[in-house]
Image (cartoon, rainbow, N blue to C red; front, side):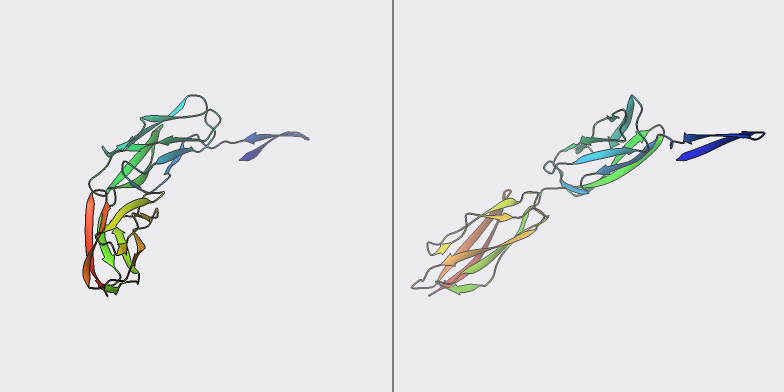
Amino acid sequence: TYTTITAAFGAVTKTASLIVMPPFALNAIRLTRSIIIAGETPLGATVYMTALAPPSVSVSLSDDSPNLTTPSSVAIPPGSQIASFPFSSTPIASSTLVTVSAVYSGVTKTAAVTLEPPPVLTNLALGVASVRGGNPISGTGSLSLPAPTGGDSVTTSDDSANVTTPATVTVSGGSTSRVFTMTTTAVASSSTVTVTAIYRGVTKTKTFTLLP
Protein backbone atom coordinates (compact mmCIF):
# COMPACT_ATOMS: atom_id res chain seq x y z
CA THR A 1 0.00 0.00 0.00
CA TYR A 2 1.32 3.45 -0.96
CA THR A 3 0.90 6.23 1.61
CA THR A 4 1.69 9.90 1.05
CA ILE A 5 3.18 11.87 3.94
CA THR A 6 2.73 15.64 3.76
CA ALA A 7 4.62 18.30 5.74
CA ALA A 8 3.71 22.00 5.63
CA PHE A 9 5.42 25.04 7.09
CA GLY A 10 4.08 28.40 6.16
CA ALA A 11 3.54 28.46 2.44
CA VAL A 12 5.91 25.55 1.83
CA THR A 13 4.54 22.01 1.49
CA LYS A 14 6.59 18.89 0.96
CA THR A 15 5.39 15.33 0.32
CA ALA A 16 6.96 11.91 0.34
CA SER A 17 5.64 8.50 -0.59
CA LEU A 18 5.91 5.52 1.72
CA ILE A 19 5.22 1.90 0.91
CA VAL A 20 3.54 0.18 3.86
CA MET A 21 4.24 -3.55 3.70
CA PRO A 22 1.90 -6.06 5.31
CA PRO A 23 3.23 -7.94 8.33
CA PHE A 24 5.38 -10.91 7.31
CA ALA A 25 3.46 -13.96 8.44
CA LEU A 26 2.32 -17.42 7.43
CA ASN A 27 -0.65 -17.18 5.06
CA ALA A 28 -1.61 -20.76 4.12
CA ILE A 29 -0.56 -24.31 3.40
CA ARG A 30 -2.08 -26.11 0.43
CA LEU A 31 -1.78 -29.76 -0.57
CA THR A 32 -1.59 -31.03 -4.13
CA ARG A 33 -4.31 -33.63 -3.45
CA SER A 34 -7.13 -34.10 -0.97
CA ILE A 35 -7.18 -37.92 -1.26
CA ILE A 36 -4.30 -40.32 -1.89
CA ILE A 37 -3.71 -44.06 -1.90
CA ALA A 38 -1.28 -44.35 1.00
CA GLY A 39 2.09 -45.68 -0.05
CA GLU A 40 1.40 -45.15 -3.75
CA THR A 41 0.02 -41.75 -4.77
CA PRO A 42 2.54 -38.88 -4.63
CA LEU A 43 1.65 -35.93 -2.41
CA GLY A 44 3.14 -32.46 -2.13
CA ALA A 45 2.38 -29.16 -0.44
CA THR A 46 3.17 -25.47 -0.75
CA VAL A 47 3.53 -22.99 2.11
CA TYR A 48 2.46 -19.42 1.35
CA MET A 49 3.66 -16.31 3.22
CA THR A 50 1.99 -12.89 3.27
CA ALA A 51 5.06 -11.03 1.92
CA LEU A 52 8.52 -11.59 0.47
CA ALA A 53 10.71 -13.48 2.90
CA PRO A 54 13.77 -12.00 4.56
CA PRO A 55 16.81 -14.27 5.00
CA SER A 56 16.66 -17.36 7.24
CA VAL A 57 12.91 -18.01 7.37
CA SER A 58 11.94 -21.56 8.33
CA VAL A 59 8.38 -22.83 8.72
CA SER A 60 7.83 -25.75 11.09
CA LEU A 61 5.80 -28.68 9.75
CA SER A 62 4.04 -31.67 11.31
CA ASP A 63 1.19 -34.14 10.83
CA ASP A 64 -0.94 -36.36 13.06
CA SER A 65 -0.50 -39.73 11.35
CA PRO A 66 2.21 -42.40 11.60
CA ASN A 67 1.50 -43.25 7.95
CA LEU A 68 2.47 -39.84 6.58
CA THR A 69 6.05 -38.56 6.75
CA THR A 70 6.24 -34.77 6.76
CA PRO A 71 9.53 -32.81 6.78
CA SER A 72 10.13 -31.13 10.14
CA SER A 73 10.49 -27.75 8.42
CA VAL A 74 10.75 -25.98 5.09
CA ALA A 75 12.88 -22.93 4.31
CA ILE A 76 11.37 -19.97 2.45
CA PRO A 77 13.99 -18.65 0.01
CA PRO A 78 14.86 -14.97 0.61
CA GLY A 79 12.75 -12.75 -1.64
CA SER A 80 10.12 -15.45 -2.17
CA GLN A 81 6.65 -15.93 -0.71
CA ILE A 82 6.33 -19.68 -1.20
CA ALA A 83 8.14 -22.96 -0.67
CA SER A 84 7.07 -26.44 -1.79
CA PHE A 85 7.94 -29.84 -0.38
CA PRO A 86 7.01 -33.53 -0.85
CA PHE A 87 5.61 -36.12 1.56
CA SER A 88 6.06 -39.86 1.73
CA SER A 89 3.42 -42.27 3.00
CA THR A 90 3.04 -45.91 3.94
CA PRO A 91 0.10 -48.25 3.28
CA ILE A 92 -2.88 -47.99 5.59
CA ALA A 93 -5.62 -50.47 6.50
CA SER A 94 -8.59 -48.09 6.52
CA SER A 95 -9.52 -44.60 5.35
CA THR A 96 -7.96 -41.96 7.62
CA LEU A 97 -8.18 -38.17 7.61
CA VAL A 98 -4.78 -36.60 8.33
CA THR A 99 -4.12 -32.99 9.30
CA VAL A 100 -0.88 -31.33 8.19
CA SER A 101 0.19 -28.25 10.19
CA ALA A 102 2.52 -25.39 9.35
CA VAL A 103 3.68 -23.01 12.10
CA TYR A 104 5.61 -19.75 11.87
CA SER A 105 6.00 -17.05 14.53
CA GLY A 106 2.97 -18.20 16.50
CA VAL A 107 0.66 -18.54 13.47
CA THR A 108 -0.63 -22.01 12.57
CA LYS A 109 -2.22 -23.04 9.28
CA THR A 110 -3.55 -26.50 8.49
CA ALA A 111 -4.60 -28.62 5.53
CA ALA A 112 -6.17 -32.07 5.39
CA VAL A 113 -5.65 -35.14 3.25
CA THR A 114 -7.45 -38.49 3.32
CA LEU A 115 -5.22 -41.55 3.22
CA GLU A 116 -6.96 -44.48 1.58
CA PRO A 117 -5.95 -48.14 1.49
CA PRO A 118 -5.19 -49.56 -1.97
CA PRO A 119 -8.32 -50.46 -3.94
CA VAL A 120 -9.35 -54.11 -4.01
CA LEU A 121 -11.43 -56.08 -6.47
CA THR A 122 -14.98 -56.13 -5.13
CA ASN A 123 -16.97 -57.68 -7.93
CA LEU A 124 -16.89 -59.44 -11.29
CA ALA A 125 -20.15 -59.28 -13.23
CA LEU A 126 -21.17 -60.72 -16.59
CA GLY A 127 -23.65 -59.12 -18.97
CA VAL A 128 -25.74 -62.26 -19.41
CA ALA A 129 -26.05 -65.68 -17.79
CA SER A 130 -25.81 -67.54 -21.12
CA VAL A 131 -24.76 -66.86 -24.69
CA ARG A 132 -24.80 -68.81 -27.95
CA GLY A 133 -21.38 -69.68 -29.29
CA GLY A 134 -20.17 -67.12 -31.82
CA ASN A 135 -21.63 -64.19 -29.92
CA PRO A 136 -19.68 -61.87 -27.59
CA ILE A 137 -20.29 -61.51 -23.87
CA SER A 138 -19.32 -58.59 -21.68
CA GLY A 139 -17.86 -58.53 -18.21
CA THR A 140 -17.28 -55.78 -15.66
CA GLY A 141 -14.59 -55.68 -13.00
CA SER A 142 -15.27 -53.32 -10.07
CA LEU A 143 -12.84 -51.88 -7.51
CA SER A 144 -13.52 -50.64 -3.98
CA LEU A 145 -11.85 -47.26 -4.70
CA PRO A 146 -10.78 -45.31 -7.79
CA ALA A 147 -7.73 -46.75 -9.51
CA PRO A 148 -4.50 -44.78 -8.97
CA THR A 149 -3.22 -42.20 -11.43
CA GLY A 150 -2.11 -43.93 -14.61
CA GLY A 151 -4.61 -46.75 -14.14
CA ASP A 152 -4.16 -50.30 -12.90
CA SER A 153 -4.48 -53.72 -14.46
CA VAL A 154 -6.81 -56.58 -13.53
CA THR A 155 -5.75 -60.02 -14.72
CA THR A 156 -8.58 -61.92 -16.42
CA SER A 157 -8.93 -65.45 -17.81
CA ASP A 158 -11.39 -68.25 -18.57
CA ASP A 159 -11.33 -72.04 -18.61
CA SER A 160 -12.75 -72.69 -22.08
CA ALA A 161 -11.06 -73.22 -25.42
CA ASN A 162 -14.13 -71.67 -27.04
CA VAL A 163 -13.88 -68.35 -25.20
CA THR A 164 -11.26 -65.65 -25.64
CA THR A 165 -10.82 -63.34 -22.64
CA PRO A 166 -8.31 -60.47 -22.62
CA ALA A 167 -5.28 -61.29 -20.46
CA THR A 168 -5.53 -57.98 -18.64
CA VAL A 169 -8.13 -55.26 -18.27
CA THR A 170 -6.96 -51.75 -17.42
CA VAL A 171 -9.09 -49.68 -15.05
CA SER A 172 -8.39 -46.04 -15.86
CA GLY A 173 -6.98 -43.77 -13.16
CA GLY A 174 -9.82 -42.29 -11.13
CA SER A 175 -12.32 -44.96 -12.28
CA THR A 176 -13.75 -47.77 -10.17
CA SER A 177 -14.76 -50.20 -12.93
CA ARG A 178 -14.03 -51.35 -16.45
CA VAL A 179 -16.14 -53.22 -18.97
CA PHE A 180 -14.41 -55.79 -21.17
CA THR A 181 -15.56 -58.05 -23.99
CA MET A 182 -15.03 -61.77 -24.44
CA THR A 183 -15.49 -63.50 -27.78
CA THR A 184 -16.86 -67.02 -28.24
CA THR A 185 -16.89 -69.62 -30.98
CA ALA A 186 -19.66 -72.01 -32.00
CA VAL A 187 -20.01 -75.15 -29.91
CA ALA A 188 -21.79 -78.47 -30.42
CA SER A 189 -23.10 -78.76 -26.87
CA SER A 190 -23.72 -76.58 -23.84
CA SER A 191 -20.94 -76.00 -21.33
CA THR A 192 -20.33 -73.92 -18.23
CA VAL A 193 -17.51 -71.40 -18.52
CA THR A 194 -15.77 -69.87 -15.52
CA VAL A 195 -14.35 -66.38 -15.90
CA THR A 196 -11.70 -65.30 -13.35
CA ALA A 197 -10.45 -61.82 -12.40
CA ILE A 198 -7.45 -61.25 -10.10
CA TYR A 199 -6.33 -57.91 -8.65
CA ARG A 200 -3.87 -57.31 -5.81
CA GLY A 201 -4.24 -60.87 -4.58
CA VAL A 202 -8.06 -60.86 -4.58
CA THR A 203 -9.79 -63.32 -6.93
CA LYS A 204 -13.37 -63.13 -8.19
CA THR A 205 -15.07 -65.67 -10.45
CA LYS A 206 -18.29 -65.78 -12.43
CA THR A 207 -19.82 -68.45 -14.66
CA PHE A 208 -21.97 -68.40 -17.74
CA THR A 209 -23.41 -71.06 -20.03
CA LEU A 210 -22.09 -71.33 -23.55
CA LEU A 211 -24.92 -72.58 -25.77
CA PRO A 212 -24.81 -74.32 -29.17
